[in-house]
Length: 143
Image (cartoon, rainbow, N blue to C red; front, side, top):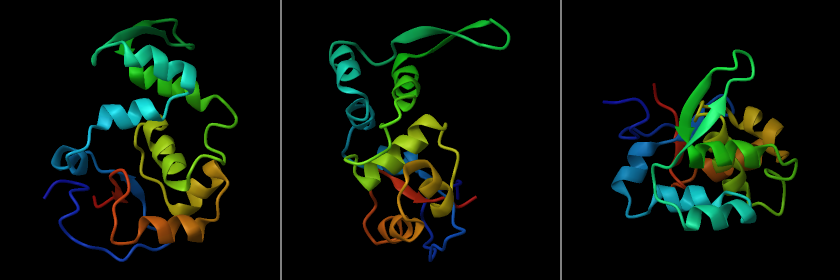
């Protein structure tokens, strides 16, 4: 079994780490790229509506000044995350959590850690993410 494959069920707790299960997206009939674009700021969404998947941008490492080619959509998500209101209401709880994982390289986080980033109660996050329904591929991380 691969990490995060979700083939076994766990009863999530406050110590359970969650992440975006990209295998869930591969099995679903939904388009991850469209969902990622929907998480951008409105002015960014207009740009990506006209651009193909795989567009790259130059990114300059602030510490080394080294230039790297990076996925333009991922870069736009990082820019959107700098907006102080990006994770806050009226953004839904599920979208806020999805945005956290999109912008933190999908590093698994507990409901408490997510609460610190999105300003929502950890118990509400836990109850939402631990139900039978999987929202946007967000599932417990099973190493």
